[in-house]
Length: 622
Ligand code: F6P
Image 1 (cartoon, rainbow, N blue to C red):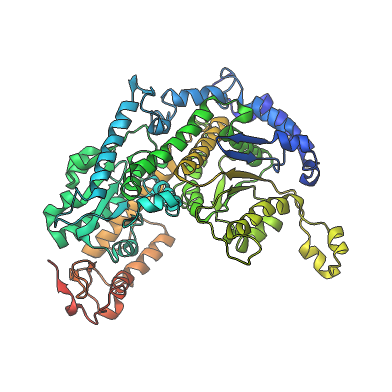
Image 2 (image 1 turned 30 degrees about the vertical axis):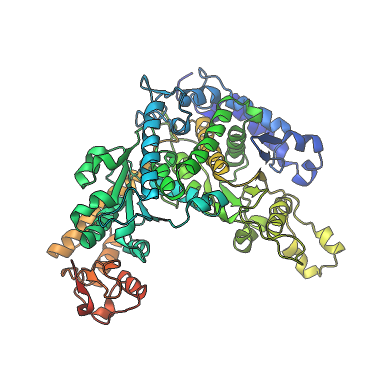
């Protein structure tokens, strides 16, 4: 059979389609009564318990999904999951459109592991960078590496976007309240600057002193427009305050492009490398995440995070499919998306510390670990897919989500949910006289919601409860809404690493089965090239007064309105507000009256004690 045979043309797929008709006749209310079925749908590994008994599936369904996964390579390019996992771990160029290996697992491999890419064991290179990070972060944290004026660098701003931002932010947010990490971070601050919106610059530098700030520029390519403009902006912030020579002490970089790092003016000795076999959205375990997180928490905490991820890597590589958490999750996603027809998935952690898990997995609409990876319309061989691939991921920590979109998932659309709970709170609180401690209160919801979705509420139950007839339709819930629950023993750095790797590998499983390339992102590139056309137009209109041309009617109208109602930028009146110079720099290039100042300026000044009433109160730029 031709290599372009699609998964949907195979017998196991067709068999699952037929089986679907059987499943459609069942209700979770009944399926949940079968204790043997439920027992078969629970898996434990390394302290975690996964319960997927509330999926709209029978034990049979799983067997059929395993058959789909095991399709032999000669038959079809899609599936043959075991082989694809091995090819990934063996460093083969499975990212065929970019001709690259996909080796984020090497980033957390133990020192003695051997993982080859293009005939070379990459593990020693990984550890060389990790050792360099350990050394550098210890010097910064101990105060032996100081800034240009001899002060210790206690604040870090990590500049990066997409994969160079969301993964590290997720881990940072998860560790911020972990007792061990908290102690290690005492007296330090870590901030992330991603958006090219100058408001994000203002928010990040507010209250910071360039003398005590280290800027880490994180960019795989070192060409990403947003990151590079933000990097130039903070370079200006530092050199205006401390002199251009200060950049060497206050700016370091993480990149695969060390030539551009040097061109930018960062000492190559202060650059931390990674490699083209690390996809941007899979890079949190490279220097992209490890450097900023080690500066904040110390290398030993971050090493635990890497070990947690590595434990899942081993499990993913070697556990039989029936016990393999990422494989089970991936197959169930295929079942939900391609068979039951549920296009979305809600990620609902019952711990505030995981508030950035969903944004990392969904990666803020543009750039998605899951959606960028699997949001594809063609197979890896370039054949148009006759079925939908990819999922729409979103989420919010419980119980906050319960007070916003849960109405929709209980009564409106069917959205399979991932409930993630933790046995031991990072920050337990027990108030005397309360019925339960605060974490138990939270977890009551974690245990209740999956059943509410599965069972719903029938009109008969409501009648028995004497609900008035006119309210019965409103209070009736169909139930039969699938979810799965993952219970972690606690949420320390190790568990955060486990969780990250579970989601990364689940996405790979889905892509392997669908027969798509989960490791490229050509759609994102399209948006980038269109933005560059607009950037050229804005420059030409502002600098040379050229009219808007070459766009459709809609964009032309919007652009013209934007250009007309914005006073042209001409004069550079950069300076510092008097009260906190040189800490709070205002980089104002504006020739209009103060009352029209953009939000950035207002924001920056409002953050200081002394709000100037006109530009002349600005101190001149140093
Ligand atoms: O949006 C596409 C992308 O290339 C991502 O894959 C990457 O994480 C992000 O842009 C940022 O790229 P870089 O790290 O090269 O600045």
